Image (cartoon, rainbow, N blue to C red):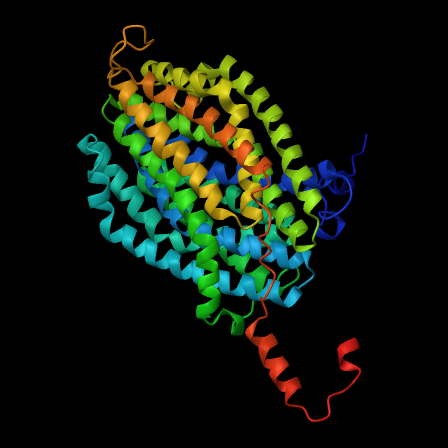
Length: 501
């Protein structure tokens, strides 16, 4: 039987012009918008998974090294990620309001500013990585490997930022398919390069942890070049131009006003993981390795929820720009219910096959035992994290990035981190407590309880209608618009038909 792959692909994926984000069935729109995001995020996680898979077979020290370095990578990315959120939200709201020139200007300013931040953060990482990683007090061998790995990754941060902003701007315009296709090609490149550079093949020397970092940076750099070329070409929703990329102080303030809380939200997540890692390193190296594998599994399982989060962000932004407030509420509620259902099913599967999942990355008995315990503690709460991510996307799409940040800070800073330390160190002064001694299970427990509480807070906050009255499209003429207005006002005999064209 012959299968028409192109026809099948058209049924599964929709081009931006085929999506109905501000009208039509919500479920259909969210599905076709979010599906490519799921695949893109899975492919993006494949960068880290490929490193974890091959380095797990290289040595336990190598696996522990990238486990030590991963939270720092996440922290660097999070510091600049808020700007990509600002760009995505602005493009979405301008697109919903059919303000093409303003959407293009927002995209151009966001690209320039974000890449500049990426260069600064990358330089800081190269210079200060030794001092930062030494805080964790890990085994000297692991620390040395992690330092080498992070220095190379830091060098590649501008490339990573370039591709991240490409994804965000395309998503804001409603195009999630193009980033998926670009990501597919670069992941294939990374998967091929990883074993060659880690183990050495033919004339290529064995580089170990450094090889994994080089493969990742090279692949991400290729993705950034392709993504920026697409943005400059203007054939996929938004178009950036060099003239619009000249720093606009007023617009940069606007990006920071929207993006700074989003950066705070993501940085809060990253700082929490780094702070949790400090507690994890109080235990043995197998526990550190198990935590690293568990976090990566955790990230992969949440791909559907993150995709729905980003889809809701775009749909919320475009519907606010179009003035469809009722559709905003319905979209967020539908997304929360759907995300809860999907993540709960994945939680059941994870709980059942936890040892097998960990063993796929490291078959050391101690790592498998600790990793499986970690997954079985958090798996029953996956659905609640789905609710949290859905409503967080709604807050960001409405421009309420500070609200999303506050919820995240409550989740990580005031619940997860204190609970992780107190319980894992056996400091609970009650005999009836299930953890009577010092144990890493207290850390796993903190992930579970904090996810439930944060989901309830986010749902209650959004359903009160606190997302309203945040239309970012008002008073947003670009400098080019202002110049045209000045020229028209000074024209002694303007063309009366100009206002109708």
